[in-house]
Image (tube, rainbow, N blue to C red):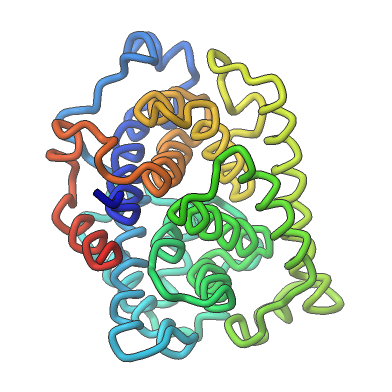
Length: 334
């Protein structure tokens, strides 16, 4: 039986999101007081998700629309992304403590502003890489399409070069894991990818976005983002040399409110418990930082690598937006 990587990743992302929703903004002692021992954390009833899953579905639906009409390209992707982000912004369900960057940028997109003006070029919050997993799961993309699409979906809201690079790396990690890359070599592969792309500004996808910054050149602009991510991957590698499963992962790789830390801490939780994905989710949800975003990334990585059957049926059966997640997963697993 072939593992269903896309379904596993999307369901894992939503489960992590729901598990981390009640613990976000709490320190670890408060979480333990509220939820009991972290290794026994229960999925809340009902299993409600945050804007992390809602915006992942927005990106997934935009990609489905963009690829329905042919090859994925920036012009094909921008309109459906804008449409999905605007619909999310106006939805009464958009009441799950979304980030200010997403709200400000989506407000401007809803007003019809050109996306490069809507983009918050000073923000590297984790709001763009928590939703990018679909880009890594969609089959048949070239490396250029995957990187460009990952950065463009970030740029509509989070235009900071670190947000762009972290989104690209997150999609690349999901893609590698879905293809069966061994987790032991993953951090090394991501570092190599970051070095290779360090001065590659994807003008076909980003246009003149870099000119909205203070940087002297597009290469200088994008290199700042990759350097932030390389520093985070360095801290991740250090943490994995002497793993400490009982310690709050945020102490090693950061609290996850910003893009490169969300990537590194989500990866840390996954890599600490590669063969115990539910334990990985619980570890990610019991953190002092942006618990829902860290756990949703952990779930996306674990599900991409292990497939959909690793998630307990009594959890995945009651996750919010289950039918939407399953329909995108089935499309890309086919």
